[in-house]
Length: 92
Image (cartoon, rainbow, N blue to C red; front, side):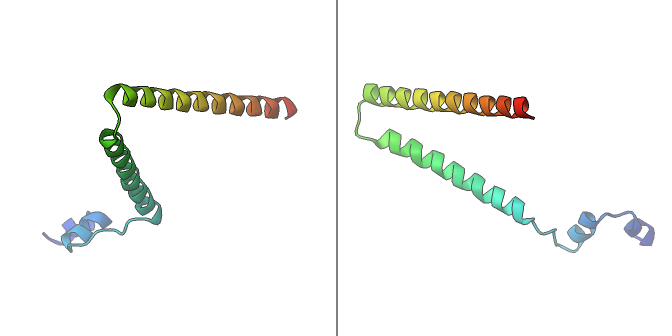
């Protein structure tokens, strides 16, 4: 490698040659951490459901009710936001 080759390298390539890397931004670190927490929450909830002292039928019924309730909440919230947006457009 000569001087002409070094001039064509970008920052990341130079850092890699030195055995270094750029520091992650705070936002990137937070998102990474939140992703890991989310995976942990899903894994824990799944384990809790599978280890719960319920029969398969009871578990399916409970899950079905919770999913339906969550879907209903999402629809209600979405309708509320649409209504808010429409009223803002009408005012504006």
